[in-house]
Length: 343
Image (cartoon, rainbow, N blue to C red; front, side, top):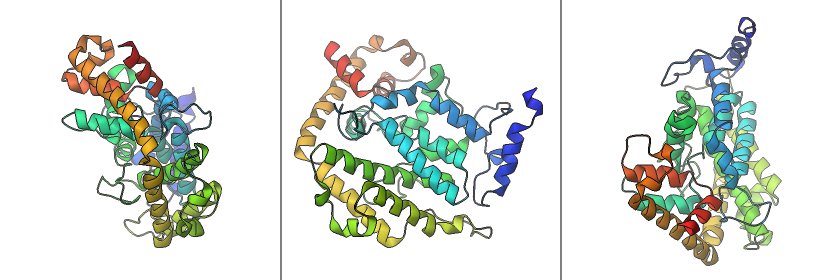
């Protein structure tokens, strides 16, 4: 019997060699509903697998990152973004001797609640739905309720905390006003998310002909590097070096995952450049307005025709608007476009 081989226990024992600041799966705060431990996987490994096998994770491949329903094969989607975040976060955690399994689960689940049409869809639902809408809160709702035939995935506290607190404001990639993760692994995912999207959004904008490499601000490029790979390497190495206290055996009580001031400044400069030259570009805004109208029409229609919602979105006792938001937030770009045409 595999349960007698102590596979999970052996992995948990290996975790004892991690940094004193690392989250240990056997010490997890647990799940909302108790479950017998898996004989093979730790609690965080189990969470990772549940996320990967969920429907919401599969739909990420057809959700926009920046460009709305792009025709090219090489534009970034929510799925490829998610995988890049996972790779960066795991690299940092491995170097700092933190828990890779936990950071991988958080990274893979962090954008499950993102709307179609990227942040444009998020903005519209936030305007239409009175209580407000934020994709990180929706991601938590997906794993707590909507997935698994409205039973939720019953994930551990640490993974859900990282998912909820990965989001950040525009001003600074390390901004904590939107929440700070309770684990260092969650903090790693938050900064890995910013590294991933800043760099791949530059690549997509160049691919789309909106900017060229020569347009990038020199003050940032001199610090970070001239190529996609150089910039990511600079950022990742800087985080590891600046956050090294998290690895040490005599680590301080609450070390921070951060960047050195000059690399952080250069990274925020690139982020500001993207807002000015890509995200807020007039041509992009014209396309974004079309997406806004699609979301508005879908919201209005389903609020007025609740019986047209799929059965699974009528099975739990909440107000119509909440059900409609759940349905629209789960749509892919193509599905939303196709559905609004049909309606």
